[in-house]
Image (cartoon, rainbow, N blue to C red; front, side):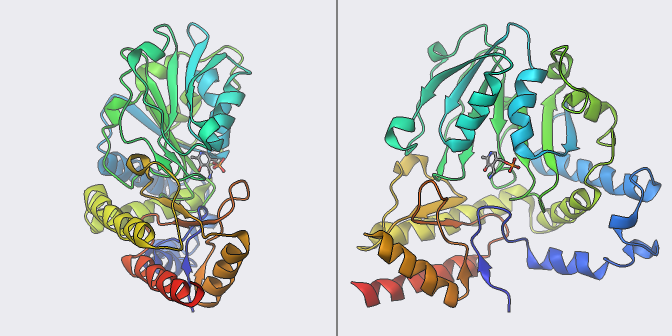
Length: 358
Ligand code: PMP
């Protein structure tokens, strides 16, 4: 029996896509082999790579002056790649809204003069600071934000006005979950393992002028232009992960694209937050206007009750609901692949638990 998996990542993948991939696992489109066994230089793989890029471009409406690359190393490798690739005045501004954003900031400080221009750390990252243009150094090479903070469950509900300073956006846990205007950002990066596909690939979307600004010391593997010039085949890419992502992109397009999934995601999140807000047992402790659509943390009155909830939920087929080690409590990650039925099942379980434990 499959369970409802609320993991923050790698999380649930759409069952239809898993089945589709399974049906082609041994013999991909009459090639007599699996995608995993194909040379990355074969024309068959090239077709997969091209389709993945074209579908992502279509789904996100990526403008023509932006390049896309699929690379390895996770979003974490981009923490150092960003300052190595966008470098002119040697200054970069960071908004520290969570643990990942803080890691990005600390890593960047090794390669540029990184400045934290705003942070919500003192309040346990429970809100998103409001940045104005005056907060940003006008000669900063870029402004780094993290659109959705996976661990604490907050989300930028506005785009900072940064003038000519390009915004770099870590969208690891929110890419493809809601419509965005790519042109509002200079660069977007995201580890695949939430809304894109299985772990292994990282997506980069880069405005072309920012491909020409790398530091001399930037290693070739970290240099974005190495990957965009080679159309993601600079070296052996994570072929299966990219192939799987292509199947996810096809699925997303079939169900109506980002616009359609955004509506479903808003409905799912609303249902869950409404339930938590009306509950006397559970609470969500982040600023309402900054709540994430993807990661919904909540707590009960005690650690013991949290543990009881998690154990009983697991028995009911609702798994990976523990909050991140650093924050505890519970966290329901409800990415694109989490069906409405999964959220409803969680709410029903929460109701039953509350009745039995109040
Ligand atoms: N940024 C965010 C917002 C994340 O959620 C994560 C991983 N959960 C990372 C960066 C790090 O990604 P990776 O594990 O792919 O390096």
